[in-house]
Length: 553
Image (cartoon, rainbow, N blue to C red; front, side, top):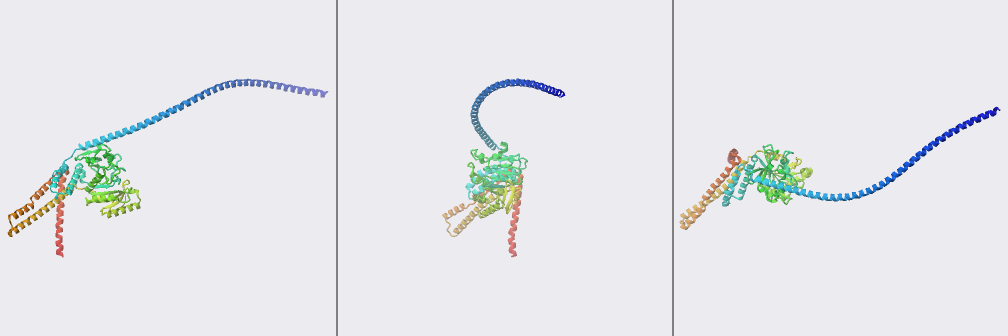
């Protein structure tokens, strides 16, 4: 019984437990149903969203299709625009080329106008250049109007060489008159072939001023020295470029163009249509050079130029003329193109030095920095051998680099020593008086020699006349013949010529104080007198020495 009640109790407990579990399961089912219902609502909602999205997607696809069509159209339009742009660019390029061509033409025309204005201003300045005094012109006028006619009547007395010497004096006087500071300078001609570096060589002795383009001579691979230029140190602080006119006037070339020296080349000269040297034979460039009393002359290259516009023959004659008038000559050989001295150099030097045997020659192997020490020595030895074979005397030879301003090997004498020994005040007034006296003495000797010869002939005729008279052979015919011979040997005309010649030389001498000034001229005469006295004393002592020696013997 108790067992039954126990089992029943257990079953009731299990039923209660199962009932509770069933209730819990129902609750769980209800909950799940609620979740399912919620999920179904969510799914429905999402279906609506998907439907909406599909509708939007369809719209977007239609928009994309429209955009693609638009894009295709735009691409097509872009290609058309690109073609149009290319065509426009081609047209623009053509216009730019035309503009560039017009710019070049305009610039060329402007340059031609500027050059024409420069030429016009230069010619105008030279023609109207003021003349400080007329001493050199008076000197030249006496030669042209008096000496030359006299020489034509007495060509045995005044030869062409004497007239040439007088013309050289005229040239020197014109230079002194144009630039008085030249009066006390020693002239050193810088010569050589084209591209030997003559202008750069002179520039290496000029203290550089970066702000002044006219402080240096023009340089370049093309011929640049078209007109001889005298480079010297001035007492003035500022550099100057001065042109001398054919009339003897001076023109400040930097007033015409601030960069005048950079434009003065063969091309510029050829643009005139005539030789500029005919109206401006030379120029002066004042600069701060190392040697106070030296004047360098930058001469044109003598050899055929690379430019057909160069005045080759006139350049050669010009170079020779300035070399003949110089106190010393520095001959440049460019080591960039030469392994020895060219034969054309030797020929030119022999001809130039034959007209001035007293000139001191120094040879510079320029651009030496381009060669090794061994090559420089070999070239120097070769040049010396060729000079010796040509019997050309020289004071020294040196390897030098103008750009580096550096000296290398030398023989006999260094370049610096050569320049230093000439760096002294020179009295050009005294030199010119001595040159005139030398020409005058030469003429005197010729006339006096002729007078002496005629007098001897006249004495011979007189002796013959007396002999014939003593022998009784003196008839009327003989007397007339002897009288004719005596008249032939008359010296009155030659004595008159001698007197006239002295007058001409005196007139020439009287023009010198106008050029040099009275004080400088008087001082030169005093120096000349002292030299003459010294020479006379020396000659007197020399005349006594043989007597003393003979007595001693």
